[in-house]
Length: 201
Image 1 (cartoon, rainbow, N blue to C red):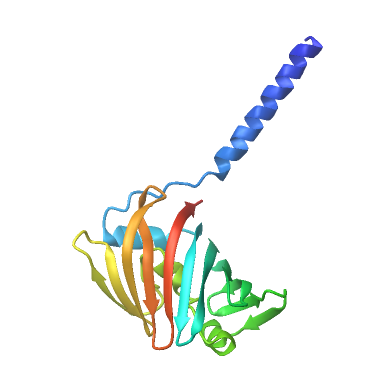
Image 2 (tube, rainbow, N blue to C red; image 1 turned 180 degrees about the vertical axis):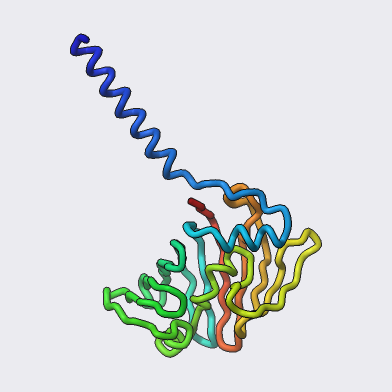
């Protein structure tokens, strides 16, 4: 083999590796969610997914609007919340209600009860434990829930753990219809979520 041919072979091999790498990073497609029972079973069983979007939180005179990136891997989640009003970027990393919070200065605080501790710290809270399910448009399977459905069979409202959740809009995500806009509200805080992009692996 000539040096020129060998050089072309190396370039071809590198191109294949790059294309293969890009393909593995693409978001997988969800299996078809034909009915409510299937939807719950499939979405509850998915272990690795993420969404990128925007969040607005209000509680009396406190609150903020910012970006929210959420990554779920089995029972562990990582969320990055960025917003104005001096909050900077806050990172949440944990399992269920046991969460580590990293503030804008890089100080890490362990939150034993994330909803309560966020309320005490900032004056507002978000439903840390159940948001992973509500964002998918299904109830948290570990807590009793009251659900309401739209004419097409999609979840429109649910009441769970002192929160009322309204899914206001769906759109395509991962090849299926996924929540786009939802609002979660309890007696002290209101959380508005807009999901711009879904990724499933």
